[in-house]
Image (cartoon, rainbow, N blue to C red; front, side):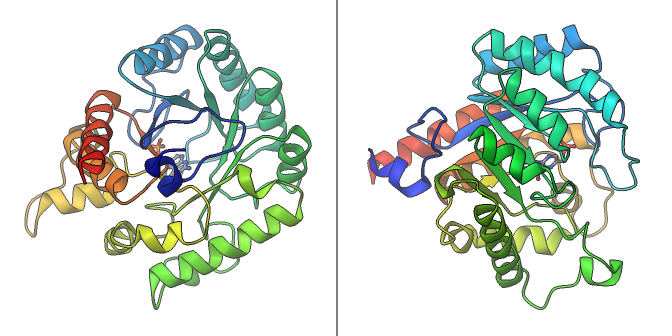
Length: 287
Ligand code: PMM
């Protein structure tokens, strides 16, 4: 194993990459925050996923439910209808597919349709059947930090020390997930940028990715087009640029995250990030 692989960790049952991996996003939703509605048809979504692979994505994350603030939940049948054919179509083409879902039945059917990884923004909290399903399938699992499902909205975005608290809360979720039967070498952790966090929280977490890595699991960073980038780019006075004008800033985060030892970055626009992680790898190799 190369020093790069040792540094960023490896997820059992997934391919091994000798640099930070690139996870391209296909949102099969009419209302996602940054690209809602664009890939809302099965054929277009599969084509988009294949295009992302052509542009350098190592994995493709397929989601059928928007987690945009204020979004209402889609029903289970609708989520299945959106996601499963796209997962099946991409997996049939040899793509490493991740499914972005909070529902056990969507995870289960996606794994049966060829998905390699389950990405749950609730860290297994939204659906009590999620951890048992993923454990039974022996699949890798992304545990993201989010207080959205905890009681009491007042505590959600309030932190004394966001880095320490996110690390502690992720640690607790990882323990619960391991107790639920998911093997530790299949767990990825994610700080959940923008989920019950403001721009300063997101930036602090990015500045301390080493503390997340110290949990001993590969780290996924999903900064793509998020609100905090709009905030940074707007400066003190101006209005934030719209989501689709945040791709250069996203690629900058990808380079920084790769350099800080992230296992993967999740992005909508793949090309620039694919370059960024390769540059970061070359710099790392030169040290
Ligand atoms: N963010 C979104 C969706 N899925 N998954 C993980 N693991 N981490 C994230 O931060 C995350 C996610 C929301 O972004 P989008 O709707 O713009 O894709």
